[in-house]
Image 1: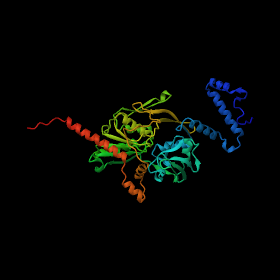
Image 2 (image 1 turned 120 degrees about the vertical axis):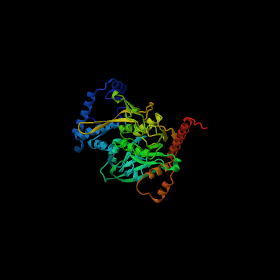
Image 3 (image 1 turned 180 degrees about the vertical axis):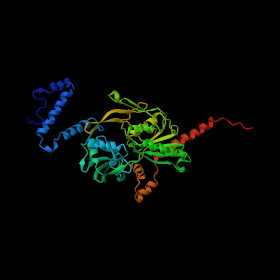
Image 4 (image 1 turned 90 degrees about the horizontal axis):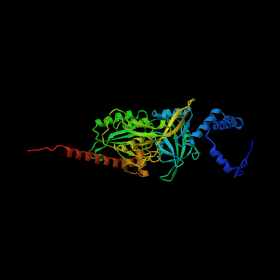
Length: 430
């Protein structure tokens, strides 16, 4: 065993010139056998000589190695022990335990993509774009995404403290939250907008908060109710929608597009990852209803697939702000012991071959909101009572993005009426 001091081998290592070592490394072939030999030797050295016997179980060391290996690839690839893999499966079924907060890394900083509605994070006032500096006092600076998510998760009733930096106001805030069982309704607020805002046109409005297993079925039921109420046009609100299941997003596309229409495709290094996703072969009644889609920087993944497809295929007017830009595909491979590896295997492309990842979907109509307007929009979606000042501000709040979408659809409806009159056969009177 040799102990070395830093700086001793700036130009020569073990008597071999550094340039010669670099050349030798470049010539060395990528060998699975050689690499596994190195790994196994390191594993056994730890087992043999590491000071703390409680930390050297084979499973613990292997899981740590897998976590480090996958997190080194990109922020979205991760290793999941059996309990974490079960949590992932539960998340897609619209019920799970935790804070209800979707996070990702943006600019090397753990960032809130969106707080899920009716969750502890949403009720506490955490906002999209908030940067999480510390979790229960532990800095997030050197954490990978998987480690951060593990810290955020926990049993119902267990408290947690988040230290957050809010760039819009330069505030550092602490939030004390209690983890809870969260039931997510992914389709919300179906309504025919009031005559005052829509000038007498019957414009429907509906929100999709995320894409899980029941989303497409629930959406179909609510759209049928809106049609029965005389809906002439529709606004689909995808703001703060963090995505979810790819298959669910494609099924939702089927509600608004013709049968067998390509809505997104994936392309990766392996031929198996080059896939095209199409709408179902069944005709739906809403494929010609004039539409607008609302998006913002909190719209990600599945929300970007839906907005990108409807925009590219000229099916809807997209209104709002450029979306988050999370357009990579993670495939989950279950391992023998119940753990799983989630690996980025491809990227999403819209029907016109526009890449989503790190670019986002640019709206047809740009409509921005101030931080205060965003705060009031989120407050308006809360179910718990508000303070007197917030309640008054919410009641007087005018949603500029929604108003732009209403104006756009009114223009479409007026144009359609005029075109219909002009194409009607002339009536000759005597």
